[in-house]
Amino acid sequence: MDDWELEHVFDAEFSRTSGYRPGPAGAGYSPSRCRDIRRDYEAFCGTGQWSPPNYIPPDPPITQAEREDYQGFHTSRTQTYSCVLPGEIVRQCVVHMAAGTLNPSRLLGIEYLIVDEYQDLNPSDLEFVDGLIASGVNTFVAGDDDQSIYSFRFASPEGIQSFTTRFSQVGHHELRDCFRCTTEVLRTARSLIAGFPEPNRIPKNLVSVYASANPPERGEVHRWQLPSAIQEARSIASSCRDLISSGIPAREIMILISNTLAQLSTLTQALEAAGVEFESPRADSFIDTNAGRFMLAMLRIICEPNDYVAHRLILGLRPHVGPGTCNTIAESVITNNLNFREIFYQPLPAGIFRGRQLTALNHARDICARISGWQPTETLAAHFIDILDIVSNIYGPQVSQEWQSLIARLPQGITLEELRDYLWADTDEQQASLLEVVYTRLGIPVPEGGLLPQKVRIMTMHGAKGLSASVVFIPGLMEEILPGERRRPYPGLVLESAKDALRVYHTRPCSLYLVLCKNASGLRSILTTDAISIHCSSCRHV
Image (tube, rainbow, N blue to C red; front, side, top):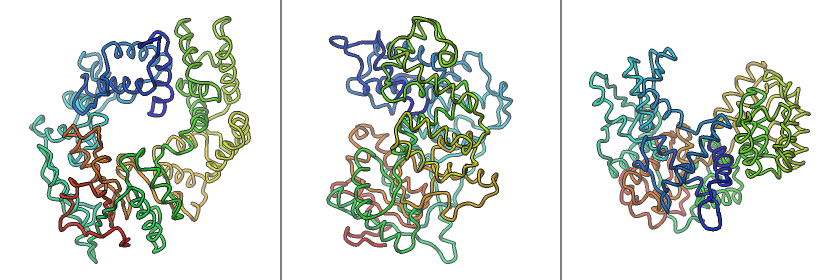
């Protein structure tokens, strides 16, 4: 299951599961409490211990009774839907490796292993890789402890910092040339790192290759101080507009945010007012609506008929079918020793499903029957009318129009399998790569405007990892947002937040705008160095 499915399927059903009813008057767990209990379990999966370092406990903390409730629900649902949670399979592998019941290197015939972004591995990941090394697999790891920003999945830079100690015979190779950042941006990053030193940090002596370019490219770093979030957003929006007017492609401008809830709305309103087209973080996309996930689920079933989770989505994402109905169906499957997938295709046993359950199941069975003969290699054009009819009948004309707008920019010769991969991609860069393959296969030229929309990109710190832009804005550099109230009591997480501010190090800007609130005293003292040009908020320097 991915994050969307965890929230809309797993958490939603856990909150409605009969038999797990704490509190007065039989009140069940709230959706937010279900999320907290599930995250507590995920923390165990990622580390092998309860309440590990970097885990911020909810208030009130998770009780042992809640853990037992979740374990009972989790075991039954993962078996019913034939699924695992993110990170859970690694923990299971580690447990079986320790017991001697699993040897992945022998099972898969692994001789050589490359582990990229090693600094982002959590304790379970490290145990897994260490186990492969111990079994004789030749291993190459690469990473940078200054870019360890995945504490939300319990990663720690200690793994790469201690690697040469844990494996004394290892060879060590240091990369000094920085191809991503111009001289000024790199110097700013190093200044911030020096101001927030982390224990056991691996020392580095990076040099920007832009310094030896002909002509040399120094880049620019600007720090703005603004009295409010609204003025901050307006200044960024007007600067984006002016940058685009001066010839900077809109897609070469990126706005990195650390708190979507606190920052996104104000920024998008300002960009709209300035007439700047933009892309919001992926959570706002059509594919993460109920209708979008329903369409993706159909394609998943066409490509993999044994995708149990996709069948659960077909069942539960139809209007007026909620997690409560899906939960009672799942419980009936468990109680009566049925196979979940078979209830979509085989005759239903008499007397088990009634009322809303039966109606929902029959609607889902009808969809499965309609697409049962479709093949992954068939084209979108071949089933365009059929798909449009399904989405229109279920979700109405407005959603139907949204679906048509989404697929209008795709070649009609794209196969259903390629369409599934396109919709399921994590980033638009991945989507563009997929489309390039499709255009090449079809022998037709790429559209003049390119495969990626020319819009300013608003990205989360983590979502932007590995991407590139020429101009990067980092708004909201204030303690209430970065690190934020939840992280502030934990020194290690505060240090990681400083690394979040260095996401620009991974985004290759020539110009960097650091936008601070007037009370960002901690970061201001670090950033006020000769590495940074300081401009007032009215300068709007381009």
